[in-house]
Length: 419
Image 1 (tube, one colour):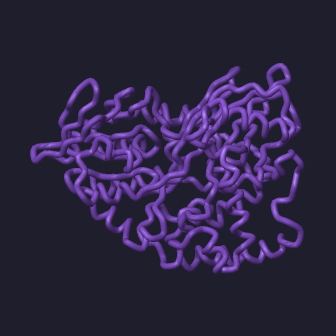
Image 2 (cartoon, rainbow, N blue to C red):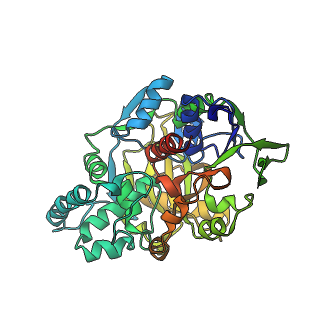
Image 3 (tube, rainbow, N blue to C red):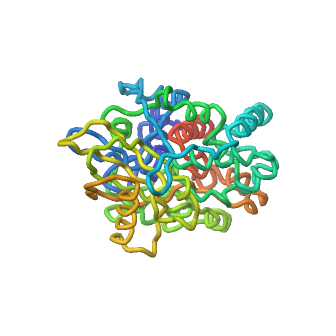
């Protein structure tokens, strides 16, 4: 059998799964089936439509350096719209504040010059895949910045991670953050008032939908309930059918895959180490205002979970003097939905928004990671050694990193190496 004739299953219809299917098709594979448990593709990329405009509930931001993303967009005939977004910093009462306190700006600029040198000395840090994590970069975020006298840089990076829907970075190994906010990305963000960012005309849903059209066999609303790997093939069961495949690519959260995968001991042990952050995004309609998109520095810490740490005015268009804003907060599972919304509405009112009308809410498990001790115990080397065992391959954010570009880059690498 030619390898292109193999029957391949992909579990998960987010960016990783869709791009894996894209690159398989480019290599001549035609017998590919993608299983997605929801009734839409995109994973954490979800677009909400209102009044002929699009608004992102999940991933929304791209930069001009994202070459693989732009390459696929070009092939799919999607315009690479560029939008000017101005982010300001506020206190909890809506007063505009400086990103750094008085006297810290020059110290930050000095630290930034040293920060650039990190990527010269350790270029592997900004690559997808976490293949080779240099020593010391496994340390927790604030500990690493403190040890290297980058206190102001740490504050700035924690603020900009809010744009990726993440706060509470204290215990996250620093290399996860350095991969997202490498010095080039940070440079673009620091100049964001004059540097356009990449957005998608009609919403990111246009990108994910057009990618899904390239999938030979797409099965929506088809949660995988069992994966059984036998000597004669891999049997994948959904509520509707059981089908046999030659190989499978799992792109969902690997810890979640233990619910359906006949995991061996090493898979079970490794996947159970994976942790995530709980984040919520909300859409509200508010009375049109001059308040800019913003970040609340005070709300980026664990004692402020549930409170607004960032909001984005995604579309300047107004309808009857109203605007739509997307709001980010770390989610609290112990709270009712009403309690969560009430906290956010109260925060928005304090900031200065009025006539606040709740539209919708999404919960996301973001920034999959393992802690420092597990990195030192060779988590990633052990995980990579599993690639191909039992005809099974692994992808997703725990391997690629959290940006759209890294997800696409990793899928390309995976398909080129193993298929």
